[in-house]
Length: 528
Ligand code: AMP
Ligand code: ZN
Image (tube, helix red, strand yellow):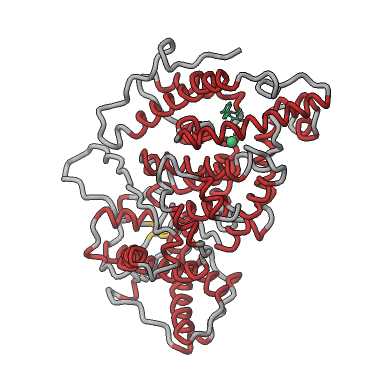
């Protein structure tokens, strides 16, 4: 790696120029003696966005390589030092990924639409003896052999966006253009670190039972059978589905989530969902919503519009959105004066609890999947998750749809990413009537079971029955028709308009479709 001779580190971005002393030659490899004297303690390292960090990272990579060859290195030392090297590379500032514009062309460059490729499923990586899995694993490995001069623009774009942050955050001064060769060196070094990191993590990746693998093959389908997954997974649907999704979107890799920590986190989340033995608001529902969010992200192209952090937050929000649900509604909490209602002043009682309990869990180091996020990333992630989960409070439903619809009718709608992701999550939360009949029927029966159990409690406490909770006086079919017609269908309609608005132009559509009006079929009306 060739790095800055001039000290011009800026906030979170390091400009690469050739080392002035090397005059076009590669920097000399460190001697064995230098490597022997290396202090490997990760505490003693310079900040990642300083020129010094490049040298230190390179030296450590050489050292790791040597020790790997000798088989004398602990996984922990390897991981910590690779993480540091990866962060140094991410701080490197590269602006050579755009196509050159013709001379005199002053137009603003069109926003490129980065096409994401989901990663190889981790169960395919784990069992590379199967031919299909081997082909995918080979494709991954081939990347590491790419010569910089042969890198096509879209691959360069992907590499740059994976190994640097500049596309989203930094701006380059026009007189600071790096040479492509030096960029290429950085990319190669990035691939090198990436490959070692993947080797370390993939050996530690969770093993998937064959039955789980079989069910997960239909993960991208709208009517994915989460009940079958849970059965195959021995009741641990969240553990496998959550792990698989975070791996597929590259989140484990991108945010350096230690695999065992992820496993611990998902295990504890799963336990929290099973705490009250709810017929409906349990681990299955969380897994179902997370899978439906995945469908929306990958099948509509939404994943190309969102940043890595936004995708990470959306998937985690889906997984935790009903964490430690009590099997009773907000209304029940308020009317019975529960401790939780007292704590949250009767507002979004359950939703506040889901978020708070999930973030409390993340304080435990063994479950902290956010441990390698920067302070800013953590803040952004937390804000997104809070906004998204609070928006699953059904009492916000009409307001949420009204706001989004109003925005879509503007001459130039600007859709806020957090609001878009919130609407998607809300729609996925109530999506089962749009799934295959047997799945929908099962969900509805489970929810009614839960409502009726609440009704039994209400009767015991001398409270009035909440709607749909009296097992002797509930019109099941009618309630379902009402739910579908007034809640589900209008939500899906607004969500479709919103997706068309943000993704249509990116995918070359003529423009956003006319948003649905206020009066026709498919509109919602306040039920009360
Ligand atoms: P959540 O509680 O976060 O899962 O939000 C979804 C809410 O949608 C549920 O609590 C119910 O109020 C409502 N819901 C979902 N499915 C049905 C259904 N089949 N019938 C009536 N309401 C439903
Ligand atoms: Zn839910």
